[in-house]
Image 1 (cartoon, rainbow, N blue to C red):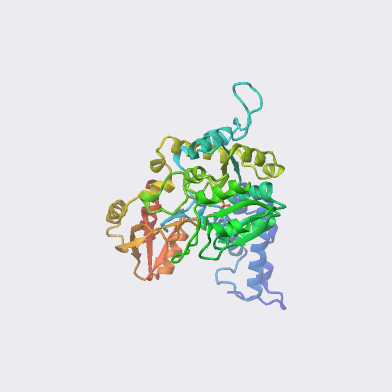
Image 2 (cartoon, rainbow, N blue to C red):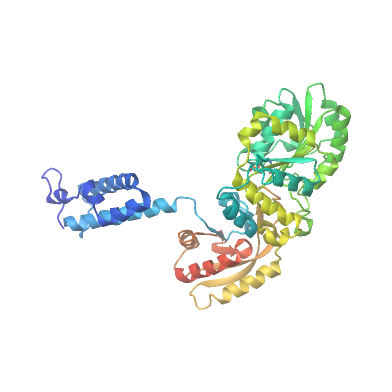
Length: 470
Ligand SMILES: *Cc1c(COP(=O)(O)O)cnc(C)c1O
């Protein structure tokens, strides 16, 4: 090997190809097609600088003693840099964590009908604001709003970008300049930096806290109402539970109070379910139709949590309240796009047909029994026989996620994996580096896979990845 010596003008340094030479290489040629000339050029500069610095530092490998060898090394690194760049983009992954509404992994996966609508209708020109009957302008979101109203029993509905936007719109339009009364136990922070007091402040609404962290009575609200009160605000604490000595008035009681005092009742239901999920262990999730029938004037909830659609903030309430929201300029700022409407319409139709538990993945996963998962895990593991992995089926728990029902942990059967010679962390990392990446948990020093959140077609891919790892 020829060593590099800066002062003596090492011959190796003279051999280093220029950035231009690297850009004329075969690798740069096809990379330019894939990622663009400007981008390859910036990658090439970094790669060339790194190699030059390494040679200056004397770290060059023995094989780098010709111009061709150095160029080959640079080409290899160029391709590697591009591959790393590609991996860092948004990618499809296999969620083997058993966390159903995994916020970091994009919350709800879409139903087949929603995917078809996304590609088949919303990806091109569509009737977003066009009326096919008259050939004139139509109303954005008409169908989705009608479905939402029908499914919840509300007078009207409106859609914005997410539930945080919905809360902001409701408070700005209905309460800014006045006061909102809220129980101390509901001044919570919900995942994703949604803090109830901050949203109130931002909307220009004065926060009036009543009661205590664990107990708030109707009388506390009653005493706090004054001429500036605009809204009684009820927030579903989602990811947080106060247990033990607790009390809170029912929504119906609050509705009675609001009516008698001439103020509005607003519930932020968060993940809010469209159907009763008690059967699946979620007894505490507000069912939107019940909030409406209990007398809430306006209710907001997310479209991509338990509902199983895409990111969106759904607002239902009385016609009068919804029209006030729609007419405010802030609605224009927060309005949803055609992609969201396509997904929501297809998803809500599953609810209208009463087939949502079968068709909407979030509900399907939630409804899966431990026995069903055990059977799938058995089948799965039998196909891994002789793979060299140590496998054990163990009892465990899945999670709802998305800030919903922290106390509910559906029972599941986990596939615990060990590969001789690899630590759990190393195996987990290998799974994460596979294509598609597999996101798994580590429990008691073993990688565990929960098939509850792995769809049937993905199961085949997962099997192949596990077989290939060995
Ligand atoms: C999740 C949640 C939000 C925020 O919803 P996004 O759709 O993520 O904006 C607001 N309020 C409650 C009660 C929630 O659970």
